[in-house]
Length: 110
Length: 113
Image (tube, rainbow over all chains, first blue to last red; front, side, top):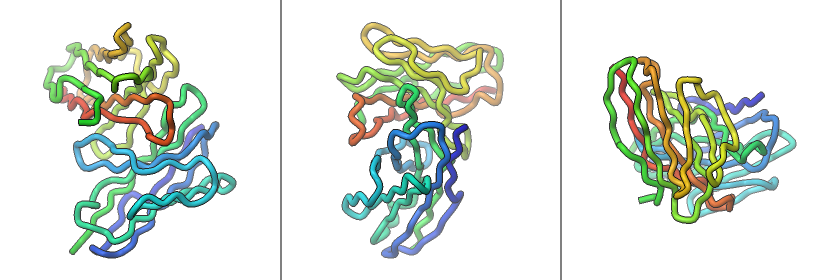
């Protein structure tokens, strides 16, 4: 089966650092993706990990441990515009589709 | 503009009716994926097409069907609509190059009344 878990909600303060965790149990694994989604809008691609370790891209970093079925998204120097849902998704072998978790709603306060 | 075009943006229809949602992928992308997102829910995979052929199927209801045409645009047909079908429907496309991810369209918001 497919199971991807993320916290439902998180809050943080502007300028701070926040880590959003994702654990997964899937029948196949061919990469893990993080997307940002503002309410009612399209998800936008943030990062991709297929090998263990940390990928850094500006204020955003993503980490993967395949043996633990675990990933996190690290957001630094938080800004108000970072208030959004963050979606963790695993790419399956079957047709390369993405399987999404339910997302973590992040609220950034001044 | 992501390059993936979905029409219409909004659709309001009555229970029992049938609607068609349209998606044009980014130029050069052969794969189209359809997702449903109900209120405060995650993205649920419905179906994938690759170069005109069905490639993967998720929890798509029998009342729903899709196809991909020779020009690579795709249509998702929803019939015998129920109130619970109200949701955002997204399509995404990809070239298969993982580092760029999958590009989503802006979605169609379907409201069934």
